[in-house]
Length: 318
Length: 290
Image (tube, rainbow over all chains, first blue to last red; front, side):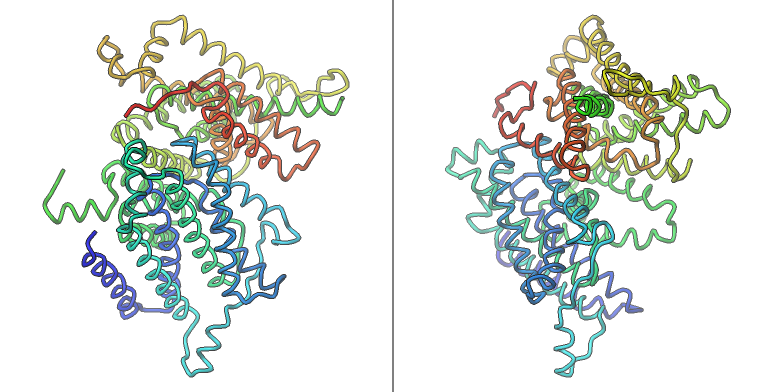
């Protein structure tokens, strides 16, 4: 991706985030928007892991859980400011990813899938069972970030929805910017070389285990920050955030939009976040439709939605 | 000692179910290199359809047979509608397709039937049998016996019948199998039907003990997947041993350590095994061709 293309991508994203509220008929849409940005953030992390480095994880919700519960627990027990708790969660997730990634990433394909799956299940189990600390399956309250009050004191009145829409939008932009920069950096190129063939990458001097681990740690931090934002935004968190289905959702969003492209992944996150909102009208059919969308897109648009559409627009049908 | 035996009995019972799920994974994986995450849904369907056919007035054996047949038809449909059209897709896409299919099956089951938990009567009563100071339910014997019977049946099928050998040949080298005249598409269809039937059979056996509801499949699929990996993907013996071991780990952990973390310990053991033996207990070492 050339530098120019990168800035166009970011520009389009920024414009979308800034202009969409003009079309919002009610405050509810800000909430949905913020939710999309949070999901998109963790999915951008997965693009680095799956799309760049070609490794799968079925346990990334575990890191989102760590981030979320760091924001819930650290202010209460350590007296940390929620914003610092987010950083703490990201550090814990990163360190944990580095520790477990080292042995786990030796595994390939389905074996890697079951190992990461196991990690995710362990995290969600701890969150569910340590009732005294986490409130068990009922979840726990998360302290307010306090930033909104600060802004109000400065004379800038925002509703909760508007505030979180902006915060999550900005964080997503930063996340996308970092991911796009990584794409072109030597490290990113080394990661993408793995995707093609690990053996070939190794023969041209890529430190394969190191690059895999790097992608895993970076994507874990993305998931953790997204989990933290979700917790802070909702003011409440349950172990579902670390559950297997959330991991699957994340991977699906990434692959749905197009796992090789940051913008595509954000698009995928937007669609899969919106779908259940639309489907609540047909609550009975929600699962049915969701599953069908997953299957059909994978079969008919294997490159993901956005790249397939882009190709079609350019008239380069395969 | 009595306690240990008691834990092992319950471990072998759940383990046998995991083993049946893992066997289902194995059959499909061998024919198509796909890990079918909808395998747990087959178990659920086996239980659910039997329950509703039984409550509609069918005798239990007939209801069970109907459930197994319908579930295999669904397995075949899954292959025809979702797996075959996606031939050659990367692992991640295949994982999502089968997980998507499992969500569809779950959603449809919930619409056709309901969201309640159900059971039907045990095959030979609920009086526990005393063995060396521990007790075991007759239904547990059915489950364990059923798993062993399926394993032996598969072993005979794969080693003694032409069709079984065709499946093995397809697993070994798809193109070579086609060259010697094996209809590999048919082998895949057969594999999906067979593995759905085995899953449904497991559901029929275990429902009197664990109950069945539209959402019991997810956990079973995850455990079966883990068991198959533990044993070594694609190896029926590995699936059987992996399943039974996983069940016993869980039961022993629940008995001696913590019932809340029984599944965690099972996964930790599996991770430990995979670190030492990345191919699983019975997996073949293979070198990647470039």
